[in-house]
Length: 162
Image (cartoon, rainbow, N blue to C red; front, side, top):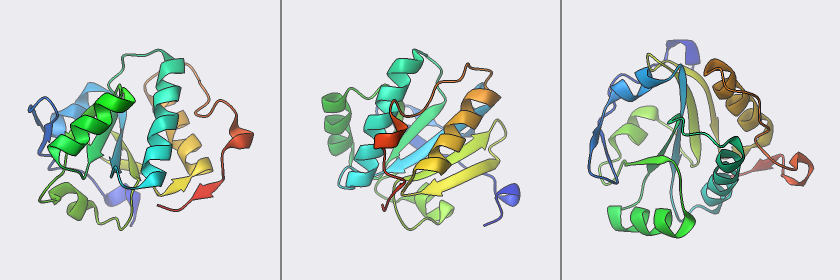
């Protein structure tokens, strides 16, 4: 897929708070990251735990990360409450409309998008260098000071299949 031509134009999801979420969410920041995940995927959980740690060190209330669950509402609520997830969470369950539209085959699937919904970067599974680049770009585009994604990068595997 050529990222320069792909754009997320129809985002119609429901958050855990049962609010409708559409493409306007991108307009709130210069860039945002969408992360599709499933609770049963250990790689998704591994990534999310690192992101929670990163966000705590960043000490920000920026709403630039959107987790998109492929689980039911009850499973997603349980996962979020037991893991103290600080991110906005939406459901792409049970029709998986957005997941199918994006065409990925594995989770986690991460997309960096600009304010108009254009996909700037994407990565699937856990690719350390790609994730570092993606989050560095997210901070840079939103004029936020640099913060390393991982506290101790040497202890983080280079890759972890989804």
